[in-house]
Image (cartoon, rainbow, N blue to C red; front, side, top):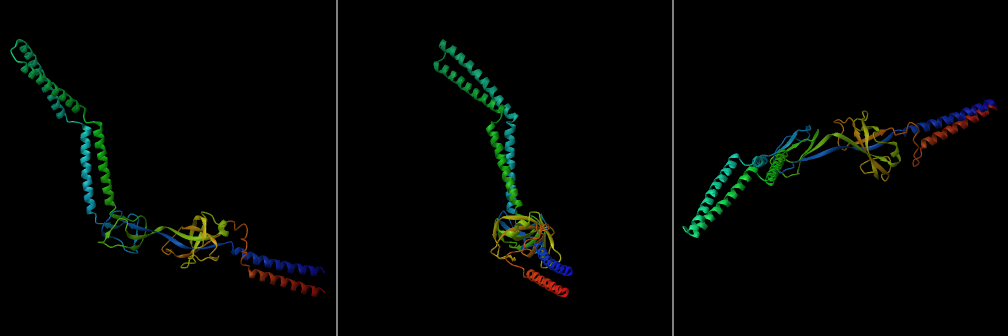
Amino acid sequence: MNRKRIVIGLAVLAAVGIVLGVLRLRGGGDRELKLYGNVDIREVELSFRVPGRLAEVRVDEGDAVKAGDVLAVLDAQRYRDALAKAAGDRDVAAANMAKFHAGYRSEEVAQARAMVAQMEAQVENAARVARRREELLKSGAISAQERDDAVASRDSLLAQLQSARKGLQLQASGFRSEEVAGAEATLRAAEASMAAAMTDLADTEIIAPSDGRVLSRVREPGAMASAGAVVLVVSLNKPVWVRAYVPEPALGKIHLGMPVRIYTDSRPDKPYSGTIGFISPVAEFTPKNVETEALRTDLVYRLRIVVDDPDECIRQGMPVTVKAAPAGAAKAPAPAAASAPDTTVSNAAGNATANAAANAAAAKGSAQ
């Protein structure tokens, strides 16, 4: 009797062990999160900010470029002429402002002072003449008209003296503050015009903004290029991203900064390393160009995964598979999906139970 119980117990334990082993294998497969996406490399359309005739294109499609390289050049003669004119206007404005700051020349002040002294002498002489004629008029030696002429001449010279004195005061005090401020403003405007001309001249060259590779050469030398018209299209070497989508049920298994492995069809045995750099806060429907194991109508969240070590083998639009151990996977196995029951587990469990029952029956028969 004891032997029969022992045999039955061992058979039941074996069946339970088989079921748990199958479940453990199935749960272990869910520990690794698998996502699908495409490589996303940034492209930049390069153009001139000023119009002109295209003089030179120094790169061709497929050429590698470095940041700071001159890729294309306009005929810049008109912009050099505009810069020369702006420089001349700036020099004129600077000289004019220097004149207003320095005030009148010492020779001009001395001339005004001499004019005042001359007018003072003439006024003093005219005053003496007027006094003498006043005395002569009293004695009847001259007419009243002659006395009036002398007085009028004295008054006229006195007015001229006052004007000369005001002129001397103006020469000594210099220009008005408003005139100085106007000269300074004119100089600033001229300097701004010169800076704009220098900017226009610099904009006759297209400079590579970053390391990359030329994708398209849109225009050829001799063509007229308007401002903003695309001349070259360059793909940047960095950053290289993977645009992937995670289903809403698996959203809690990922986080920003999470390391992942990126597999391509061309090198499935050498994955790239990457980091999740962006998780969209807005849900959307899976785009048609992304293949996932879930239905296309399921809501997903867009991810941006930064590739840590991109090379020439990873290209724009390339489909990739992203694998990562979801957060918390080591603590507990991922729950089985309710929408797709695992027939393998069911069959294994059924077989294990049947085998246990058969073994128990055989043991019972032999014991009897």
